Length: 123
Image (cartoon, rainbow, N blue to C red):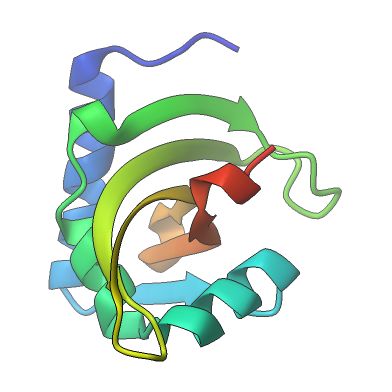
């Protein structure tokens, strides 16, 4: 798949910001094992994820690919790797690279977060 230009990446980031800043929807796939464990260990909230998404930069971009989900086979997924500060359940602060996979549903003004976990868990 052809990878996007910096302008296309920044346009995508602008769409995420537009949706999230204008009463759009955020759907987070919390039931995926890696996401669920990560959310539990670091007490990740929807507001935390929104803040991360609103602060994505083109340098956080990793690649685009087509979804391999049979129900969303035409969705273009954007992968991101971003370094953030996290506080674990014991109050310890960690700096971690996180892996984020998103797609946009502009018809329904929705940002869908498929993956959100430590990047070393990403394969």
